[in-house]
Length: 188
Ligand SMILES: C[S@@+](CC[C@H](N)C(=O)[O-])C[C@H]1O[C@@H](n2cnc3c(N)ncnc32)[C@H](O)[C@@H]1O
Image (cartoon, rainbow, N blue to C red):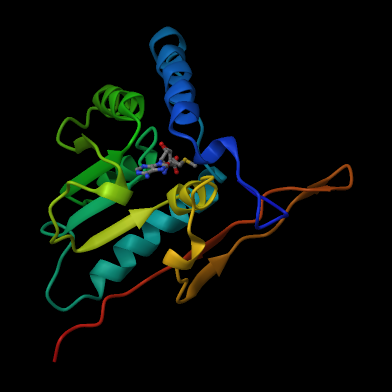
């Protein structure tokens, strides 16, 4: 997901686009066992899950088995599954595409992970309860920023965690990816 013009909007900001993407991925899963696209590739997936584990590991009042973690815009749920592999117990994946929720649930069941919670929810008008220990998103804020009605002043990146190498092929530049984190200030 990349735009050279920050003023651009894109199909990636449209709900109907994601419904059609996940309808296709659901069909591929059922027919061929294909889980669908891993956005930004496996290295970013692993780094994001490792980062989440590392953050909670050094939290004085939380541990991985009790932490409540939300993956916003979960897509096919691969990040949530990676968190399960790292012993997170209370994971919820949400997405405003109902087909994504269906896909993520089926992918997880096929992987033997029946106890992840999947919910349909538009994060811009969320009905989810608060109280999460960690909220993750991989690619969702980008998609929201590409909506035709996006108000980018709503977002403020506070810190870079990591950037990833850019690959080039045939004179074209490939994905540019970075990871950012926001941390809530603790009281007292
Ligand atoms: C680039 S995909 C990333 C999917 C997944 N996080 C991953 O890494 O594979 C962006 C996701 O954000 C979801 N999304 C976009 N806008 C959303 C919103 N307002 N609320 C919840 N999910 C949203 C899309 O349906 C899509 O699944």
